[in-house]
Length: 496
Image 1 (cartoon, rainbow, N blue to C red):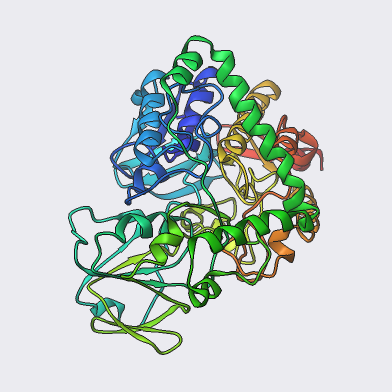
Image 2 (cartoon, one colour; image 1 turned 180 degrees about the vertical axis):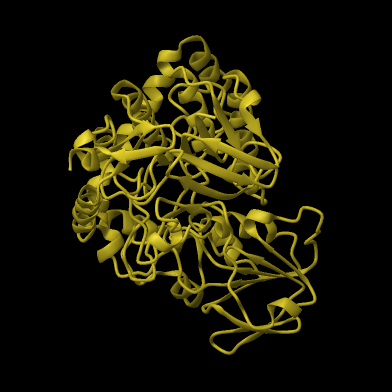
């Protein structure tokens, strides 16, 4: 194949659409599951929904005028991705139940050899769209393996297990937990929530989209474009407060404090749920039902993480003990140590995980020195704290397509960033990160790697990222030229 795409979520399907539009049809999409959808396939827990408005959380080239709600639920987003796969003719390229076990660069042949659970492939280029929210992270707790009840992660929900009347523990209070807790609290006999750090929560301005709105968006597509453009502009305006002037977030924090006061009458519980860091430092949650669920009579909030288990007894870090029948882990994903890194091996046989042992980094979030023709979709420092990831995905797809077409036009076989360009990009990026609320806000978040560096988020607007990835600058790259059927050398080597 000319291109192998790993993953069939938003990133993988978007890459497939853009490849076809660029006239590249010799590609395959490798998917370890049995259907498309990525995060929106895996996360099917009760209450699962997006916290970005529907008309902004969709591809610009595939608008959906018929979103049912202003913030869509998981079933609707997954259905949208299934439709994209069908409408854009992607299904012949999809290979389900095909997990990538290893991708290894073969310098002599100037290609990638990809070993999967369903056989081997070779490809000139690889697009890694495995995503940062693909592999669940469950803490290694003493006694967990011998817990006699039911255990599952939020992204691996067991729909056959009935929580009605059960004593249920939810570990974590992040975005998934904030949706799960209100959904299961009414049916649980007892709900115990283990909270290491409280989150700031704002009201969720969600509503059903009227039939008139759908009709207008369907008959007059320009109205949907105006709606999307307005949502986009509102979020671009917010960026400055997150990345340059965190003090501007004080007003937002007061709104969040009022939201707590309205939802929690008990002063002691309100104190437990009030963060001691600046809003925005950790991901801001949106919910109208989270606080009422935590204040319910059958809910207990433990202001501590889970330390260990003794049989069916859960012991918190504060020493308190809690008997439960089931545990739901809302403990996030391997974001700063993406598991795909241990399966990708570059020029020197070094794994990407080893290359990133001191922290992830890439040039423009997309390419890595030593790994020619490897392109990331949602790579290092391309995440967002306030807007739609689809905007970032489309920017990276522009960059990937420009790289592939540039290779063809200059007659090169492969491309990789120079050490200098990659280093300079990341030094400047981390310098900009020093001013952001994620660094100065006084919290420890999943945005930070073990060394305290933010290798997840983009410290700027989506517009600035679009500019940075509009075209490939060959001055930042080494071109690998095919000089013989079994030999290759870089432009630098040829000129030496």
